[in-house]
Image (tube, rainbow, N blue to C red; front, top):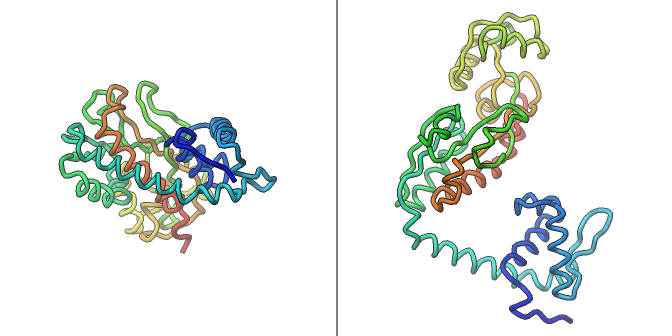
Length: 289
């Protein structure tokens, strides 16, 4: 039997405990909490010392909740529910959660992945006006012509170090379309370089289309094949290859605005939305036809 006083357990402890309990591993909990695995391990050990009870058994196949953890879970979840309600009430009363959020995002990502969550955000926060611009570069953010940028970057390529943000996932790509020619996506020698790495290196490259929507439409009309993100092409086109990692997804803000409450609220919504659609982004929602 153990006794816990109010001074023993704080909100950070509750969040940590529930994250580890639900994730079942320190690494997964660290990802959920956006901290490092050693940090989670150290804080969990400190919590167990503070409570004087083991919350998890460390076994070769992972963490296993102890009876003590099971006894604490309902109360921890009650605290979580109460804190969520308190946070929503505080946000609703915050005058800073009003005004404009200017967002720059590739049009295909906005229309295929995020538009429903944008609509829910506007319904939940009618005092915040979303201004959405379909764009691919980061210049508007650097020049503070936009507040938040959602960007699809080449694998391993980080955005400007002066920008603040996080990578939230990866958009897998595959080859789609009719296998008698390629639809260029870069133009000139740049197209021939990536075509040479495909199973069809000798097919001709016909022109170039720099917009994802045009590429998909051109493939549907039989103009040739193209590398297209799976979330955008699946359900519309025949998949010619298995999906593979293609583009890192970043949610970015200018450093001067990173603590702005309404921008943080919006960014958190976008991150949650993209994580929820992980299977679709990685081409697992539907397979080759």
